[in-house]
Image (cartoon, rainbow, N blue to C red; front, top):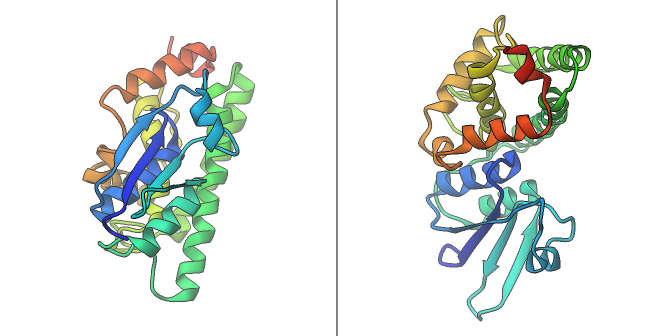
Amino acid sequence: MSDTKLTLISHHLCPYVQRAAIALSEKGVTFERRYVDLAAKPDWFLAISPLGKVPLLIVKQYDGTEAVLFESAVICEYLEETQPGAALHPADPLTRARHRGWIEFGSSILSDLWGFETAKDAGTYETKRKALIDKFGRVEAELGNGPFFSGETFSLVDAVFAPIFRYFDVFDTIAPAGVFDELPCVTAWRNALAARQSVGEAVSVDYGDRLKVFLTHHDAWLLKAAA
């Protein structure tokens, strides 16, 4: 399967797309990337995306036919099962199951993060900020000596959390929220992921500018807090 042609259908800001891009890079897989505007979804995209969401992975098979995978978790599992390169899941079934649980926990953090970044008033902003601190506190209790989630080996859990931390790399330049102030292990993990080549290359160089445009469009309280 390693010679199969892969195309990742992407959006510049989507953290779920970044998961798949990081996994592809960690596997050393060559792939193409095609971006879509989710505010004006093209017909070809709607025709192949059952949920109207990214990421999609288009798999061009040896007979010339194309199969489309949707949902980042499904895409990452497919890559783990079919592509060469470093394993991104633990071999032990129990540890692997626990990793899948923390991947879902990362998705729950993204739900709070959406409320945090789109909050239009101080009260909502603070509620979501506290929710994030609480959830990252649970992560802090899980982490060991690092540098990654389960030690020296980079995993899909790392691929999930790296895009989450990337948001704060931008937020901190606007109005630091102090989410990680009392979380030294999470902070060290965040720094280790930021230095990873696959993480850095998962977004375009104008990611920060695009995120700030998004915040302005949503009249985010975060921007007002900086004033």
